[in-house]
Image (cartoon, rainbow, N blue to C red):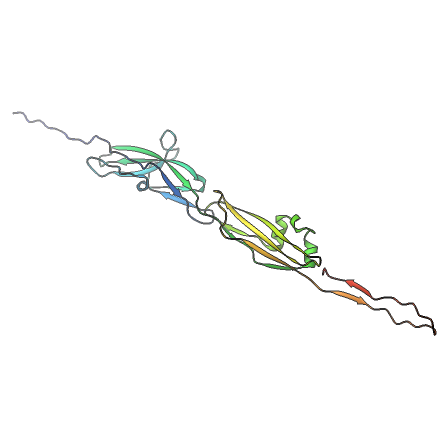
Length: 237
């Protein structure tokens, strides 16, 4: 009989299995939105014949190799700048260091609508209107309206832009009501859900000066000359 030593080794790489696809939504506020992606989120049952597997994740390029500066780790963070397709690799390592990889494309989405906060209601006199605004308020610039009546605020997990329009009119006495309507739009094209408006009331001022004529006299049977009553409008109404 001859005794023979046989070395039994595990030289078979584990099986790395990725999900077919994954959609990730960015959360957060004030433009600092992000999402964390972990290996468990993209693992579809990776395994090894002899031991448990350790999973890690990294951003990869079209060649499925880690991007410059990227290493396989416990999680990757995606932000608003990553909205769209992000290619990710999953590495599975067994107890003896054998490793295998799989890859998938992740769709990073911003699905949260922005918030809009309008300035409070404002009342101005018709005199202030005439002094500060063009005859047709529709010709006023956004900067002028913001300076006079306040600015709207917007918040979103990613970027947000604010646009405005104004409607309404004044009557022949210079009295009326205007409504400023604001719309916040984020990078994904979502807009604020609720109405975002500001009411501007233009009120009248009653201010007149009446000048009566002085007393006059004349000889009998002769009507003296005299001035009429002078009415001056000192306000807009």
